Image (tube, rainbow, N blue to C red; front, side):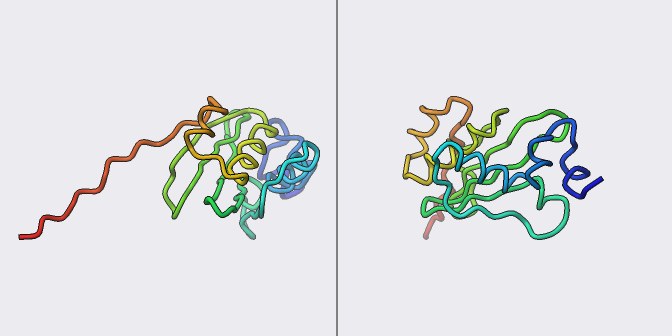
Length: 132
């Protein structure tokens, strides 16, 4: 059994096993659909090198991870390390579409309107320090 098949699980992600992990599968899927993902990276070591991918753009980072009990992709949009939107989807092509739209400059509001499975994260404003 290869490292990729042990990490990913052949039953849930045979297509990702075949391509050597999530990051290479995303790159191939985007190319097949004519989508620009920007720079795609994966951790260099451990199980996560097969199960995680980060797509870097001027807007921020799209982090993608895999479900472990069922086939789905978890997407986080991060700006300055803070998650501003997230969603789950079962189709890798839709993951590539979200990342490409983010790379192209769509706002979070536009992105969540276009992709209903994505949800903007509502954050409470930080308390303002009182000066006496």
